[in-house]
Amino acid sequence: MSQNKNTVPNTTVTRDLRELDNSTENLYESIVVISKRANQIAVDMKEELNSKLSEFASSNDNLEEVFENREQIEISKHYERLPKPTLIAIDEFLHDKVYFRNPSKEQE
Image (cartoon, rainbow, N blue to C red):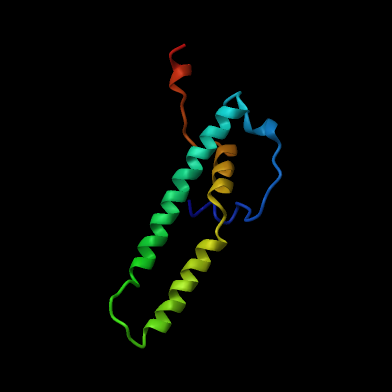
């Protein structure tokens, strides 16, 4: 995932829908694949963020708390600046970096 961070745009991108169904031959199937991959990416990002923020969890109130809050804010801002999971998933899909299969098509 880290190698895609530099190439994936952070803002909304207009897409040609005809590009999305090249590998599946069905736009709706492509959207399902992309959405499932985006959910996987979102879960991974959330787990990574939570693990980094959990390092700051403490029950003690002390003077270092202000410094820790700054670090927490910086970590949160870093994750807010990352490309959205949907944009990463679309980029991976368009560049054939997503493995998917449709069992109903395999039975035919």
